Picture 1: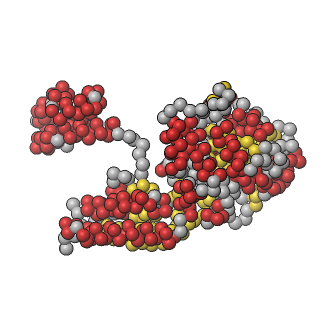
Picture 2: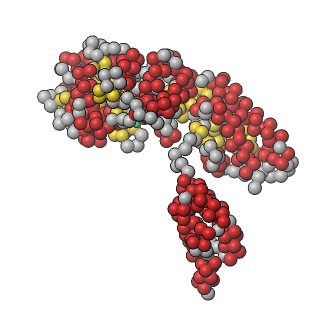
Picture 3: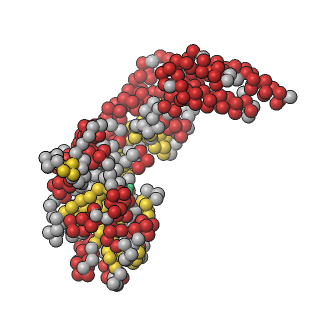
Amino acid sequence: MRSTAKSELFRELPSVDELLRAPGVATLAAAEGISPVTDAARAVLARLRHEISSGFLDRPALEIALNGIESAIADDLRRALGHSLRSVINATGVILHTNLGRAPLAETAIKHIRGTAGRYSNLEFEVEAGVRGKRDVHVERLFQKVLGPETRNSARVSTIVVNNNAAAVLLALNTLADSGEVIVSRGELVEIGGSFRIPDVMTKSGAILREVGTTNRTRVGDYEEAINERTRLLLRVHRSNFEVTGFTEQASTAELVELARKRGLPLMEDLGSGALVDLESFGVAGEPSVHDSLRAGVDVVTYSGDKLLGGPQAGMISGGADLVVRMRTNSLFRALRVDKLTYAALEATLLAYVKRNHDAIPVLKMMRLTRDEIGRRADAVAAQVRDDGNFHPTHKEPGKDGAHGTLEIAVIDGESVIGGGAAPSAVLPTRMLAVTCKGLSADELAARLRGSDSPVIARVEEGRVLLDLRTVFAEQDKEVAAALERVAGGAER
Ligand SMILES: *Cc1c(COP(=O)(O)O)cnc(C)c1O
């Protein structure tokens, strides 16, 4: 008997052709093309069929669904033809949030991409001579300006760019140590960002990992004892996302440089973040810069473009020109090279360093924001939400549970972090909006904020939603306020 009822309901469903003839759907098809609209109509019908067969729809519910079928098709079409990758508002206070795209680009970088990517460019062309050129030249001169012209042993500093730092490490190891041994401290066999593991990259590069020391203590003598005729490289890896504290010891860079010189081996350092400025003045201690490493005598340094450098996703290999030229001629380099968009973004970002215009680089600017500046913005957002709540009488019906007044906002002290596997222990004092809403759990409130047109991504801690405006662009503050007002409004129902 139930199945008869269902088959009757199925008969109520229009065919795809009938749907396409409906005036609203025909208009959509004229605007967006028949093929995506047909797909959307099929998808909506399939959903209805599924709901009927699972018993979710009775006759009255089906009537309602059929009345709204044109707008359901329009919604489906909007989702199918809209962008999947879109901007969000990062209110987590994590400056280099890998899930949120790490470093936002400088305006000048975006402008340079716009100015070159939509047209032909001299990517690999020497305009004056009219001959083929090299794509690296566009950033090489700037890296030399930023890093200084030569290393400690007066080799010229050269830099090449690949897809990301993982690729940089792979290329460097393959070039310098294929089939040979690479000595690494057991305290530095790190995993970064889920899938980058030093031992795995080492295997893929063809190099053989030679572990020395222990997790907490490795002395320079441990490296020295492990050197043999198969040794090609000494490798130091920056412990980007964790710290070893307590009974610890690590060979100093100076000791490793001396050992490498003495034994005629190159020393490589995977810095990870690769700051191009001294971050002490930005309130971040203990994060070594690329200059520090090169000046100390490290032969090859690898680092990311979209971490503390504040540019596009890329991986840099900087070091003595004699070694870097071998990487450039490795056929792997061709497979790992970057495109014109990356060069454009990187060139503009490096120019900001050359001009010492650090505030043009969003991640550096965010790092420098003071607790007081952020506090003033947080107070203003809180005040705006409270004022608007009082202003709209519909939002404030006295005594009505779930009305606007149930949004509780406090501005409290907190800490922002760098993230992205950089300076794990560096914390930047901040002020945060701590928000709760009667009738909603903190997780539900956070989910509603993510459901805004510009999704607002916040932290949830101890039953509250925390929003740190350090990572919110100042012009987005009003969108944060609007999102808070909307979630409170939505809670009325
Ligand atoms: C982040 C990091 C990597 C990976 O860099 P990607 O640019 O994400 O590929 C490798 N090594 C270290 C030490 C890192 O911190």
